[in-house]
Length: 169
Image 1 (cartoon, helix red, strand yellow):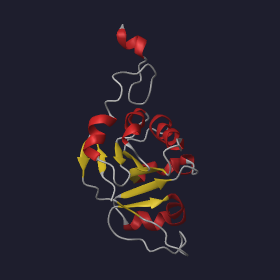
Image 2 (image 1 turned 90 degrees about the vertical axis):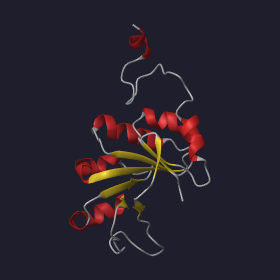
Image 3 (image 1 turned 135 degrees about the horizontal axis):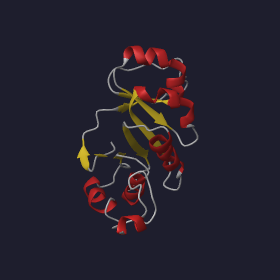
């Protein structure tokens, strides 16, 4: 089970991610009770049913899915989980940046999948505030090393809108 870092502290994860079994489709998968993170395809196929049955809704975005497809639905999501299937796949950074800057999403933005401590500093800069570390990774070490990799940055980001030269003056 992945360890969760949320708002710079270890946290208990109350959310479960709905996964489609072999042969299941978004239209036929059973919708469990509780705090559920739904794949985008399930949300698109059963939005009305999900809204009527769940008070707390999460959304899972894969790297090849467009957040623009649900831009009008962001108010329903308590958490949006962005999947990083491989360490080298950086498309989730763009998704997070779009959510925070263009769409002004203020809910929990969670990095899931192949999330390592090396990425936490950069993930925070684009707007992530929670991180489900890859299985087997040390969350205490990630907290110590992941966010303190660099003392300052030159570029602007969602976490630091002022460039370095303006902060020095």
